[in-house]
Length: 136
Image 1: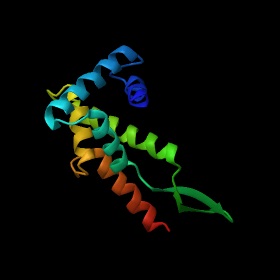
Image 2 (image 1 turned 30 degrees about the vertical axis):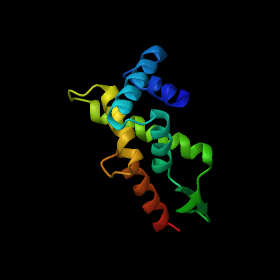
Image 3 (image 1 turned 120 degrees about the vertical axis):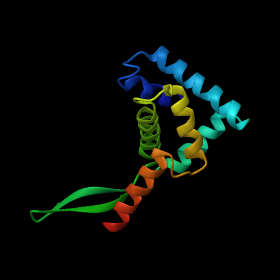
Image 4 (image 1 turned 90 degrees about the vertical axis):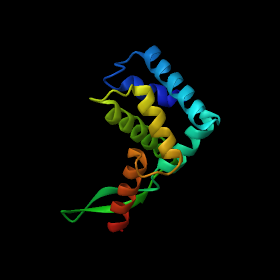
């Protein structure tokens, strides 16, 4: 939760104001609790598991030729990428729409927990893993 708040505070909307980011996450958790009837932390953990990529690609230069190679992702980076993708998806959904950032964040977390393709984080994970599989 702390990392999610910090990630929200880095974005342009919260602009370094941590109190605002905390309120956004609180509102999102209340919305999640009302919609699902479950513990929002449990839903967040499920969303992080479903949206954390397992493989990524890295640039390898060998004899002057640069090519991409598939690599496994460390657990810390997996969590960071999942949180970043969830926050980015919420930002995109709330931008130029009537939805508040809290509503968009709640929707993104619920969709990611259900492994739904309408979630930006899940779509991004599948795209990353497909790219990594192609460059094995």
